[in-house]
Length: 165
Image 1 (cartoon, rainbow, N blue to C red):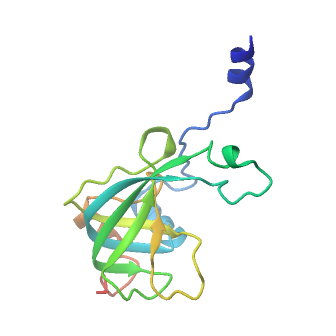
Image 2 (cartoon, one colour):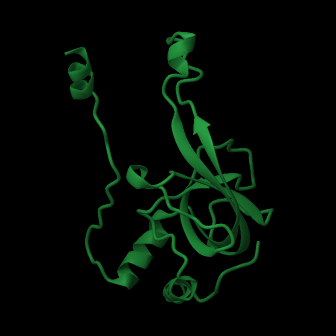
């Protein structure tokens, strides 16, 4: 009985991507570019699993409860070859991208050694930093390993091609 109450009271949310409006590739690329903080091209050089504890600093919880809930994420190290859009000036050619592990958390499954155009959002960071330390992406963005097609679509919106870091 107690187990069934526990199962009923928990809510599980899966990944759901919604596209609104025009579904053409050009319209979706324009929308993806508008909604992203960063559009970066590069090659994955590392991928690691990390565990985040969102309630670690919550002083209202006891020490056991603070670490009971954990979120599993992947941190991707990307060697940047060029960029199309950035929120902050890139002063390094290596960035870190946070994504889920895949499945119901919308995580993008990157492969080490593969090249991607990554659309992402800035992760909350120190506003004094001028270097992109970390961005976040998922399968609901236009992130892709179909490089030539994506570069061609992006070139419709700006005369300059991708810029070097």
